[in-house]
Structures are given as C-alpha cells and as structure tokens.
Image (cartoon, rainbow over all chains, first blue to last red; front, top):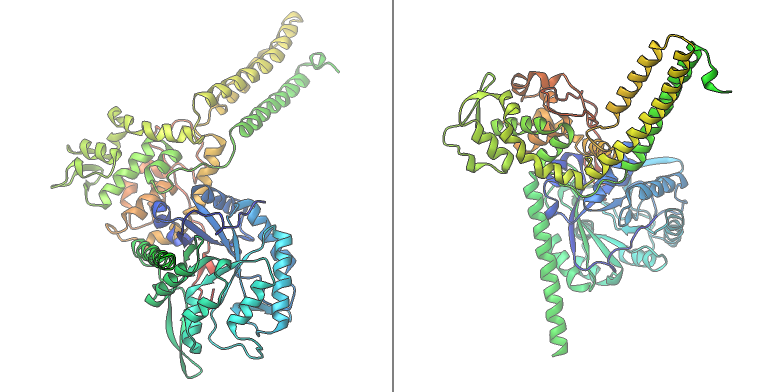
Length: 296
Length: 298
C-alpha cells in the first residue's frame, strides 16, 4: 500500500470537507471548490465491498484521506490488531493520501466507552501511545497523523499538562500531528489557558493537517463549557488560530472542515472553506512580512 | 473420447455444455479487458449520470422533471409546455436548452424521445464516457467483435462437423441446428452491452455514493431542492420518484416505472420509454456512526 505523507510533498495549502452521505450532492457538485475529502474509516470497516469500492472511485475524483475514531491509540492497552487490520485493508482499497486517529482512549477492561476520552496524561499513556503508533505503522504501512481531542473535564490522575503530553508523544513516535483547532480552542476556553501560546509550543514542522469544526456552550458540573459537537459553524477565534498556525508553519497544510449533522445548505459550508483559505492566506502573508522584516 | 462419436442426445448435452463454456469464457475475457478503476468524471452532473445509466431518454426524462421542478416547464397531465416568461436562453446547459426550445409548443412529454434533433446534444457525453472507458469506443467494439467471431467460429465448427456427420449417417439434425442458432444469437446479443465492465462498476459506485439521497428524498420540497431532485432521478431513475413528493414524474413517464437498473443497467439501447425503478433500501451511515459527533471531541 502506498500512503504518501502529506505536508512535505504539497505545493500549496488545501481545504476540504468531511465526506458525509447527506452532503453527497453538494460535495460532488462542487469538487472544484473542495480540495480534499475526509472519510470516516470506521463507517467502512464492515461495509459491503461495493460500498468500500465506491470510496475508491471517490478517491479517483479528488484527494481522499481516512480518519479513524475507534482505535484508542492513547492508551496503555495495545490497540486491537483486528481494527488495525481493517484499517490496513481499507487503506489498501481506498488508497488515501494519509490516515489519522485520535490521541484518545475508547475502551478499557473490556468495556467500550463509545466515546473519545482523554486519558490520564502520564508516562504510561505516553509510552502506550508511542507503542500503539509503532504497532499501527507496522501493520498499516504508514503511521497515522494523530489528533488532539476536546474534553470537558481535565483527566484525573494526570502528571502532565496537555501540551507537554502531546509533545512527548509526538517526539517519541513517527506520527505527525493533525491539529484540531476547535478542540484546541475549546480546551483552552474551558480550562483557561492561552490557545495561541499552546499553538506556539507545538512542533510546527510536525503539524501537517488541521481540523476545523463548531460547537456550542453547555453547562457541565456547574460550569459553562464549550462542547465540540460538529453541529455548528466554525467560530471566529478558530479561524484566527488557523491564521496564527499558517504564520508559524512553512510547509503547506491540509485543512478539513468537520460537520456531522444539522447540515446547512452546501453554500454555507463552502463559504466556511473559503474563509479558511482566507485565514491561511493571511497567515502566510504575515509570515512573509516577518521574513522580509528580518532580511531587511 | 471423441465427442463427435457421441450419439444424438449425448452430443446435444455436450454441445449445450460447450456453448456455456464459450459464453462464460467470452464474458470473462470481456470483463478482464474492460475493467479497471473509474477515471475522473463529473460526478456532479445529473445528465451525465442519467446518460450513463439509461442513455439519452433517461437524461431527457431527468431534464424534464428538473425543469418542471424549477418552474421552467409547466405540466398539464402528460402535456408539457414552456412556462410564460421563460426562454430557452435561460437554460443551464445544452440539454435543457433543447428541451425548453422543443416545449415552446405544447406537446406530450414522451414526444422528446422521437425528436432526433435532441440526440446530438448527447454527443459530448457519449464521447466523455467513451474516453473514460465507461462506454465502449471503437477499439472496445472491435475487440468485442473479434471475441464474438472467435466464439461463433468455435460454436460453428463444432456444430457443423456434427451436422455433416449426422447428415452423412442420415440422422436428424434439427435440434442441433436449433441449439446452434440459439447459442449464437445469445452470444451475439450478450457480447455488446451498452456499458463496459468498468462503466457498470462505476454506476454501482455512483449509486453507493449517492445512497444517502434515498433517505432525504421525502424531505425535498418541490421547487427548492432541484439539484438534489435531479441527482436522485439521475442515479435511481424516474421510477424511484413514484412514492415521493415528485410522484407526478410517474404520470409523465408511466413506462419509466416498469424497468429496473438500480445502478447496473446493461441494456443495449436506452431508447425505449422503459426506465428504471429501484426499491428503497436502508441508508448508509455517516461520520461518527451516522449521527452527530456530539461531544466526542473528534
């Protein structure tokens, strides 16, 4: 199987959308405005062969990437070999440009949580994640990009803060980072830290893809929290983070807008893609201005 | 054992099996020669997809239903006319232009199928699909013809030798002649499907990609979901609109509900008023298990 690692090979930033059947007409009618499609891998693991082959046809029309939600990489428990084999088979069939998974755990003690959950940020989960990433790389043929997740509670039993925990995992593995800017924004908002400072402490050269999404305010444990629900439009601060990120990275980025329900007309989603392109362009020009200043 | 030494009924059984072998071999050879991954085509063009699925007539049906939904054509039972204030210049593409032009004068919807001037607008579609390997071009047709001649030769040589032996021994050969003719006609018909193997597979893939429309069609509002309606009709056929808010399409093209293709049409003409009709099936899921990712942090 050939999975090309993006970022290093791209000529320019790309902006795309999560593939959802409900949006098929809007997406396939506007492929000239959508550079990349992200397909949820888990939906296809046990799908009929025809359905998986259709995704191969889709990848012949535009760039397709796969996104997993059920491996549970950030765990001291080894990731399920069968799931990795299914991922490998799907990568073989669909030929995505890359695949990605979350830095989360989804099961423990034989119990499926049914949810992406932030694990305790400890040496054990750092080592577990690094080991799982290596296992995934060996079985699938390419390491996944790993994605930061949103959480409504700070994981109890943690020895590290989120940024140190992510950096240690990235540094001890071959997987690059899929940075979810809404998750970053939500966590920063919910736990009172500066999202831009967080961004600046990440290894910019290892960030190759970005997720954008929307969320809503909820009451949790008597406090107001921002919930990452993928049902709302992207908030303005998330675009500002994208601009900041583009000013920090020198290589092209692949940006994917995630929307999982309450679908608006496709034109509204396309406008959000345009806005993401503008945010990227602004960040790039800021970077060039900085370079000009330094050389002058 | 020499098969030509077989007695009449035994040889007929042998010839039947031999014919089956030839037919299956030719089908396998064709499949191997014409398969492959779908190339890049415009999956957002309902007329291209309708043309791929059912030919010119199916694309014309989709165009008429789409134009009615957009208020550009007016329907009175099976009679269609261009709406007031609408000109053919307001069409989005050549197919719609020609259909609007034709219905400047009231006529039955099905009259479009007899209008030869409309056929030329599909030439670019046919060319695009041939280039993509989804419909047979001249090279593919020639390869098919060669395989057919090979098969006919094989069937013919075996049959004729036995007929000569039978005639020399003054045995009846009528059943063998009939079997030869049936086998040859069958193989001739099945050697020239309208689509290539790749075309059939791509059509199935397109049906899969658009399967979410099945669950959505009843929520489409007439006049405000024209793009989705056109795509639904293109992918699943006018017949599939029967039990939807767009059931009028069934009155316009009553015969369109009787056929069936469901993404695997292999008919050779596409020129009759028989269309497609696909039963509904369950909808595919979506990201994060088909619902929202509510709070999953993905």
